[in-house]
Length: 94
Length: 346
Image 1 (cartoon, chains in turn yellow, green):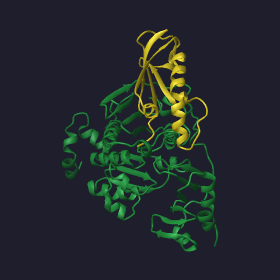
Image 2 (cartoon, one colour):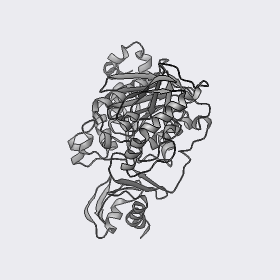
Image 3 (cartoon, one colour):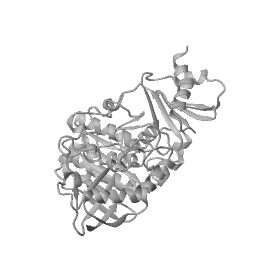
Image 4 (cartoon, chains in turn cyan, brown):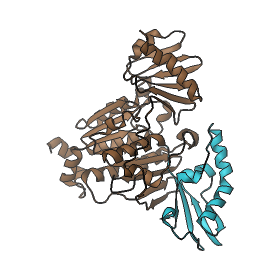
């Protein structure tokens, strides 16, 4: 179990209303599971308020990096003390 | 370069990375700007002043008061004259630099026309307000091998990425899946700062100049910023070997349907409907056929009226925006009743 920091960037922050949190997690999957347990109800509520429903995994729309490396490229998923996880969504407006 | 151009662009030419050679390349370039909202306005303004040879601006909307806070090419007179953004933008840009050929196209960019609009361009600029069309343009960029500069802005958050097909990651390499319509925040729901759109568009326009002159200093990262917090970040990104668009599968370009229905970003409870088989339509003729409608306005750019408790705007390219509605199937019925049936009836 490692203490890590999580940063929510741009559109993520608009959904959850905060830019960062700290958590203790074993690996990337554990961290993402905790993030969704904590924040998905609020995200889902916001989406429902727009009159639509989103089924499936919200994380698949995100670009997620661990210490500046795309998590899709990481074979070792174990987290270390002080790691930094960042979540980005594409920015829709303009 | 002629004397007028030499004088006009002298401060830019004096910048060593551009110089006479770079300016000459800019003057011979053709850029397509998709969308003329806040990003599109600023990009067009900067590139016209920089002397890009030909600029095509494509947008489907009209100028409205809530645009003026950040859409720097427009003014109150454009609203009074009920001008489409593409037409108003062209008029303003021509007064800024008559050496640049500016084309304003009033149209909805979709699978049926996106390739045609972008074909032959040296660069595609993102001035859009929705992700659906961005994924479509990403497909066009990948298919036609035309560089595309993505930019997005909402609230105080902005993002931009320079996409060189075959060389740098595309939008789908980084964000493979498009979120379903209406799930993401919009500038209407979460606001947007004019200072943010000015900053993101300035970065996009700078990248555009670099791409057009063949600079080796193009941004290869995903650039994000928060203009309120003053946080800027370059996030490393890489090409995805499994990216559909980079492997010749253009999901958004090939998603062909006869009737396109889309909920409009920033226009609460409005749905756009378009029958791609209709082609150009005569809106004046439709206006004459309408019965039991109210507040009818018809000019060369649009036909607007109210009927069945709905505000309906019809455009010569065959599309209609149905206001005060959430149900897409109901919007389709309204479209068929007031537009398609009146086009087809004698």
